[in-house]
Image (tube, rainbow, N blue to C red; front, side, top):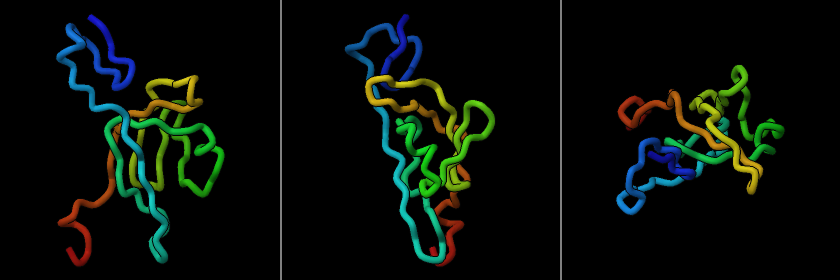
Length: 105
């Protein structure tokens, strides 16, 4: 059995039948009066290392292998892609309110 190098799914027996979801993009917006808002938080994503060094992105390390983004989502570092110098992340927790919980929804 193999592991998909893109989505890291384990136990793949036949790659021709593997429907890889790929790596998504974490999308943020800055909204006046609300600060950073995580618009999109995919299950698996890639993050450039410079994002951790730049405070305006709202990404902070939690322990040795987790990243908190804008106090709204928590990702686990599951790999490193040397070609793009980026971390491969997996979503652990999502604290964003659901549409029903949002004021005015």
